[in-house]
Structure formats: C-alpha cells, structure tokens
Amino acid sequence: MTSPLSNVPLYRQLADLLAKQIEEGELRPGQPLPSELHLQQTYGVARGTVRMAMRELRARGVVVTIHARGTFVANQPEAESQ
Image (cartoon, rainbow, N blue to C red):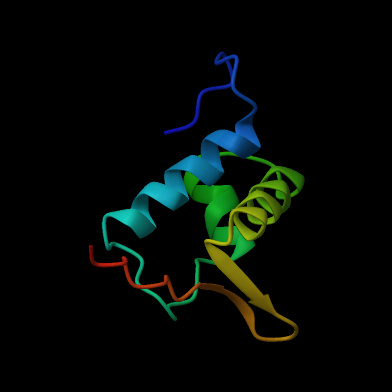
C-alpha cells in the first residue's frame, strides 16, 4: 500500500508496487495494466500520481503505452545464460 507519510513520493511508491506485481508474475508480459481510475480508487491517489507512476514505469522499461489502446506490461528480455 502507499503511505502519504513516507519520505518516498507517492508516484514512486505506486510505481514500485506495480513493478513488484510484474516481477512476481501477477501482471504478465503483454497484459494490460489496470485503468487510471481503478488505480486511483484502489490506492487512494490522484490521477496525476497515477500518470507520474506510469511515466516512471515507462522510463524503467517495465511497461509500454500504446496510443488509444492502453498501457501494457513490456516483454522482458530473457536472462542471459552463462
């Protein structure tokens, strides 16, 4: 959950929560992320916070946004075998 009392900005808390869901397989590559409205209601944050979190996740390469389609979990490159 997000905490407004944390020193970490809310958008980064939300981005970290979603990134963790992706890492743990709750959200899979190619799967759409929940809508902005759903994320706002679920985590009790403002629309701007959700948008900043999406921007953060795009910058990390974790999600891709397709115009007029939505935001989806990015296909992660296979781990290199050694």
